[in-house]
Amino acid sequence: MIKIYNTLTRKKEIFKPIEKNKVKFYQCGPTVYWIQHIGNMRAMVLADLITRTFKYLNYDVKFVRNYTDVGHLTSDADAGEDKMEKAAKRDKLSPQQVAEKYIKIFENDVKELNVLEPNVKAKATDHIPDIIEMIQILIDKKFAYQTDLAIYFDISKAKNYTKLSRQNLEEQKHGAGSGEISDSQKKYPFDFALWFFKTGKYKNALQTWESAWGIGFPGWHIECSAISNKHLGKTFDIHMGGVEHISIHHTNEIAQSELANGVKFVNYWIHNEHLLINNKKMSKSEGNSYSLEEIKNKGFNPLSLRYFFLQAHYRSKQNFTWSAMKSAQNGLESLRNKIKALGNDYGKIDKKYQKKFVEKISDNFNFPQALAVTQELLKANLTDKDKLATILDFDKVLGLNLDKIHKEDKQVKLPKEVLSLMKQRETARQNKQWQKADEIRKEIEKRGYKMKDEKI
Ligand code: AMP
Ligand code: ZN
Image (cartoon, rainbow, N blue to C red; front, side, top):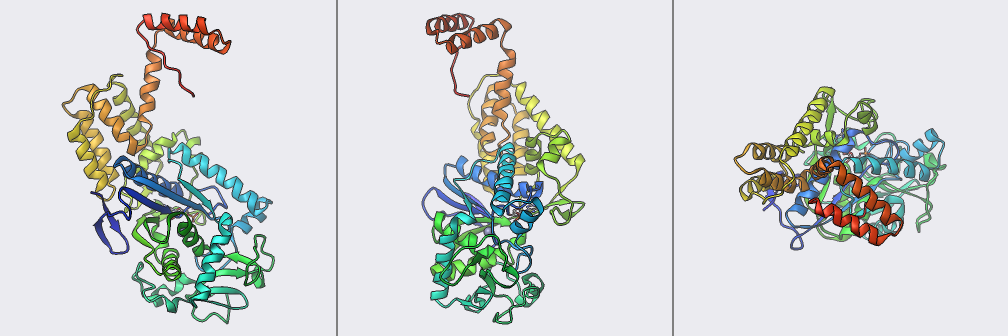
């Protein structure tokens, strides 16, 4: 039984999947115009921990994450310049090259943080037909209207527009940015653009597509609705994103998806809190951000950062400091040393500790407490081999590569003689001297070691 705090109901609820033992999960991914900072990485690691929790509890997870490579303006509302185009000018590249460049860096970073590959990584520019189709439905149903500059979603048609944010629209006015884009034909300041025409301030837009209504490019919000609809269906289980998306981005996603499809969009909304620095949100525009590269350059292992993220609940803000980073690195190092000291023998998973661990991860993904159970286990009155088996089982969720240190440990302990025989056998195999290789294998086995050839 998994309990999730659902932003939609402001309650912790028991998770009931749409299809038995399956989870359809969408996370708003990065806008690929710059190197993602470790605040963005926190969001990615938290979604990964949640995905791993479901997998550990035997759910079949379909996890979709998008890449915003068009339409995200410098304000979350319909104002400013397209972030991709701004970056293209800065880097003297085409928007496509900008996307390619930063997707590559991002994918490398998340891999180093041991984040599992999503089932679908969806670029907005690969989904233009899906986006156009959804906008057409909204136009046909009269939930959207056209002006000379754009096609807008008519929020007066969305009965429960603020059901996620629970905000008073007037209070939200400053966020909705009714200011900068002065489209006198817009009916209501909070109506948001589904499609911008290649005209006016966007007349030189670099990424545009043909549509029945005219050449242009999609707004940012429709992208997540169309992509999730295509890969997860009209209604899916979980949608995740940063808390800053509650009032505009996710509110708009719900309104347009529910009016286009006529059914509930998402059952559980999960919002992660931010990574702070000096008690302010880490953000590129504030100039207070660090990339993973910078963390590594200071001598930190990416998995130490993952360990750092494990120490705070996803609904709590987490403050980044170098000394906290140092403690996390020491914490992980000490955990690794304790595991090394357990030896190489696997025993049985201890059911009592496993139950405790499962209780923590199922209670709204309480990873800090799950980490505490790991520490408790190490101190418990159990055999070393049972501790080892249990902790490596927990690591399927924690993702700290604890099984790898065990393998490293094994290699280090091999006698020189055996290592030399292994090398000779490898050479024989490379030279296709199969008989010789087999004889060496027997020599190794005589010394009490079994060979297993694995693809590396
Ligand atoms: P962006 O590229 O700004 O659209 O952000 C991509 C993802 O990272 C979004 O889900 C954001 O909510 C998240 N994010 C951005 N800044 C932070 C931060 N300081 N802490 C945690 N998550 C963040
Ligand atoms: Zn989104």
